[in-house]
Image (cartoon, rainbow, N blue to C red; front, top):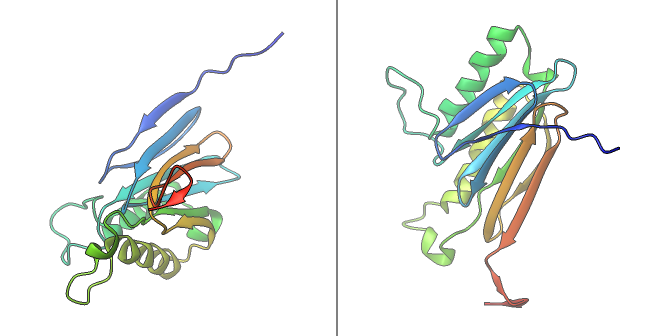
Amino acid sequence: MTETISHHEVIIHPGEFYFGTGDIRVATLLGSCVAVTLWHPRLKHGGMCHYLLDSRGVILDHLDGRFADEAIELFMIELKQRGTRPADYQAKVFGGGSMLGDMECVDGIGAVGEVNIAAARHLLHRHGFEIASEHVGGRGFRYVMLDLWNGDVWMRYKDSGTMNGKKK
């Protein structure tokens, strides 16, 4: 007899953040945005953020998950509330794809995806996280899913730089 296990799925959109535990799958769709996942293997809790830009330059009266620096601060608040440390978590980074090709670089400013990837790496390192794995860059979309019950992260990648198996 096959046992059926029911899990609840939480879809996060750009700028959103989720942290929790239980039979929950957190999922998101990425282009040039970046998702960071954290999971604590012993306590079996974790979360995901989906940010659009590296920083808005100033933190106002509330944290805004649309920005990398503030999204990571949201994670830090969750860790503090749980009495855990960044080194206790598996951190993974996804996204930062090039969606517009050569049009993304303007006036010497790097492509949005590249800047977002650099922000994730810098901020995670600065806060004491080690990146266990990443799938970043390229020219495509990613669908990322984090299973909070076991820490597995699943990803589907669609390379938009090819069409029918041939480069555009």
